[in-house]
Length: 453
Image (cartoon, rainbow, N blue to C red; front, side, top):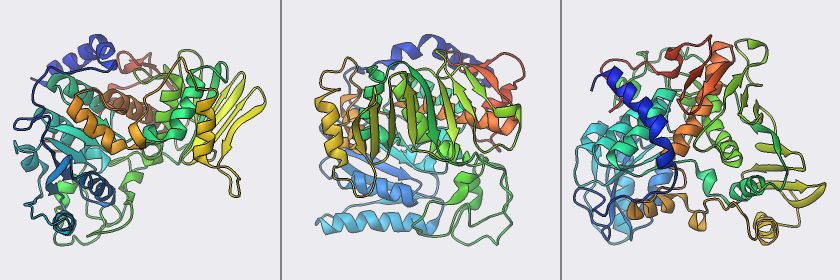
């Protein structure tokens, strides 16, 4: 299929197929992988074995009754071999001897018919290429947030899940946390009245990469680390050598991430979308104060009902204001005020309550019989939710539409910052609306022969 045909097909999918896929679905009765069965262990591989996937791998691997780790993949020899040893040592501690393969090229992982699912935690600029290839190869996918690096990629991933009948979960773990679910249920059930505004707190947009050149270190396939990104000399800021216990700063640069707008924004803007009931849609306008470049905060997403979502660098996390109250929520913190009465509050040191107690209070009162009951992940276990979806073939709590739509609002905000201009947006067509825009802003220009599957 040529590029124009693929683009047309994806646009057609968004107009006619997105609404149908928004509800939970059940795939035809069949085995969920080429050689697997619903009662067998889910055979997984892990692509990108830095700090984030190290934690994910241990989480999945610890569920020995359901998961079998088959392979690891990383462009850094030290990290790759360390991940392999971690798996082997874990199984050895359980009295098991396993064969674990280690790869430099993710395509070798995807070529294996004995792998059912992959967990992707590479830099953001790789997410969509690996995800769409994995879907096309018949693999289910757990991919870290932000799910994609461009709007074009968002459309491609949603299309790929639909075409290949696969399961995808985005690593937006806040959706599995009780404080965010309760906060969004309070809003969605109208207890704070008509929502007027939302403020989301996270850091600055991405910036062009201008890091100085450093000598290339042996054991790292730097060209493959870059992959579809522009060619540039090695920097340890982007990819620290070997095993490290930190999150590298490639995420600050627009070539590989989107700054904190797509890093923490992919968490908090995702919760804003959830609270507003916009999981299958999005804003109709992006506003940039003064239509000027180089701003670090103040961008607004405007929804069809007039609600604004404003980006600030300081604040509570997600702060929602309605005509009759407010809801504030962040990790381990919540505050619910309705008609001047504080119904839940936890987050300050020295409090004589707990988060569990405050959420239980909301569930026993306001949310006892909600008209709108949101997805409740069993035991708050985001990884288990993915495994359950792989077996049931029902959509996960952060399926591809949620992940793609939330990443899209992050990317739209960054487009406004990068271009120094506001613009209209058509969330149904996933395209600009009105003058003064360029379709190229919706794409990430791949280097070389890299492309979406």
